[in-house]
Length: 178
Image 1 (cartoon, one colour):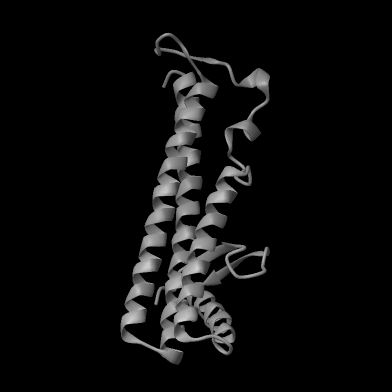
Image 2 (tube, rainbow, N blue to C red):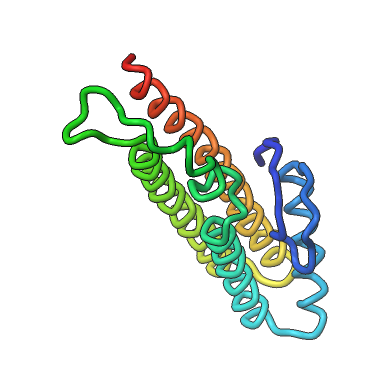
């Protein structure tokens, strides 16, 4: 298992606390959640529940991107009087805002691509689990699939933050003519 540190925001059921966790800790929490669910449900219902949780995690991550929780969203960044500097050498004259909106959209698309790739990996791990395990083994395997997706979401968020910072820097450099 990966020993990476994850930043989780509402990935676990009924949580909104932001904190760092290892993938092992996240796997253990999902294992507890699935084990509790399995007490009153069949293996096929546990599988369906795990798939639903993968979808919930993906939608929550996607919604947080679109709802302005991202501190770098263009509309939250700059007062109107600082965003319309012309960028030298562009035709017919690109403003900082235009540059930033273009770069922000590139980052958003890359984020969504990473998010859905992570979802696919989680679903693939989950599908493999259903073919080879049952009972407790199924729960352990499915919890790993959920934690892997949680790690993928955290990585996609970090990549997006870095992309947005590079985009801002690029636009500033273009304004300065560098």
